[in-house]
Length: 117
Image (cartoon, rainbow, N blue to C red; front, top):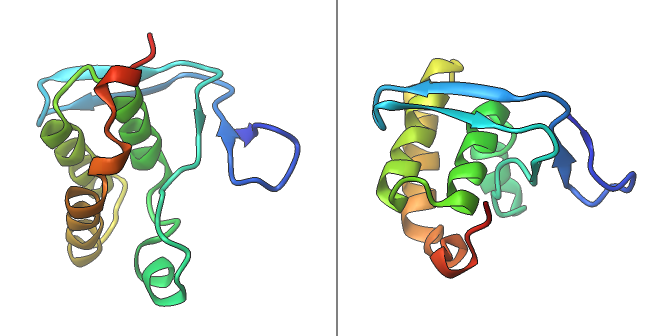
């Protein structure tokens, strides 16, 4: 990944595809090069970010992709985040914290009317 704008604005761009095979969704997702992400959209409150921020960037990229493209339901996208976090070694307590964070606070970012191809 590279910084998407050359500035410290928190956006990153994939420079090669990210492939993730999900048992939860029963399919393989390919996040294409050029996809831009802010990684995990964790509130920058010190305690919250300390507990959940920056722990599974690959899972966060796949989750952002699913929230952008809407190829699965929101519930499945969130379950894929939990699954991918497990695969990348995030401890169970942190996976559940992240999962419930997106289930409770991610609805405002799920905009099917703004899906991009």
